[in-house]
Length: 171
Image (cartoon, rainbow, N blue to C red; front, side, top):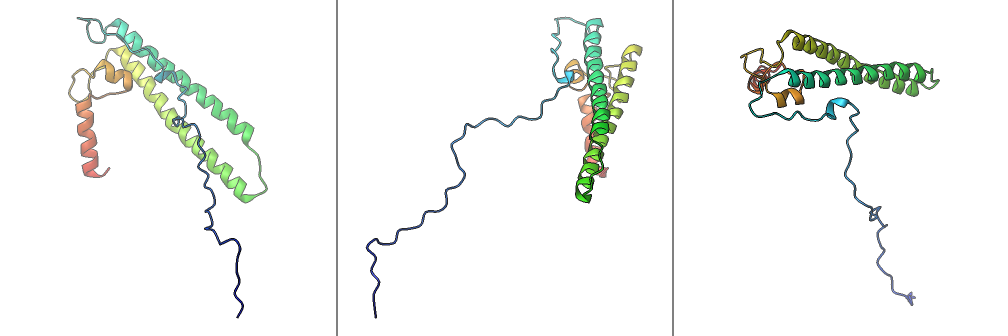
């Protein structure tokens, strides 16, 4: 029997290096919300100021109008996008992917269309003087809540109760 002798003893094989390069860590950025709705200066409440006075109403109206204008611009962009990107792909998978993309885009625009209607009705309520008070209990909704959600129709407490009921009923 012949023994093989290696001058160099076998070494352990190193595992393939993983792709763990030292990269500069950056925070993941959410898609930038281009709406003016998120880029407004919060109203500075003055001591002894009456709830929903003229300057507060003007501030909230500006937020609503800017938000509406931004949504309308998005609708126009979608129409142009759908017209520009519409093509008849020969591959059924490509065609299906494009149709799915268009479907998602149209669903988003439908939600925004409903939101535009809600903004319009909120602007109408603001003009009539019915804005800023809870539809359920009648108390003030609050300026900060209205800035956060300008189309709010209920105070935080009533909205929370509605959500609890909704979960219990499974709707």
